[in-house]
Image (tube, rainbow, N blue to C red):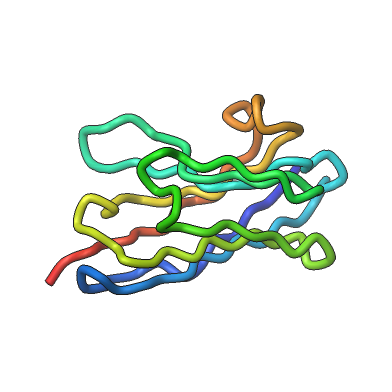
Length: 119
């Protein structure tokens, strides 16, 4: 089993920045892909960004250039740097890990961390 522990969410004003972290433990040998999804009230959970162990990244169109995903393989930790935050970025952000970029939704999930963008 894989355990994912997220940190870094909170309340931020529009235009501000936040950095999310997610540390993985347990059966991590199969975690080629790690990343972040988000779910806003009344909406489906959507991919935000993902990264493979080798550094290949995948971003949602609506965050490309605004968010940056990175990964420290030695620490089994993935990060999401979020800049120029907007109210529409408000959501619960979930860390995710799985065997590949295409099979992440079937992988392991963190408990979620709330990000609220509001003045």
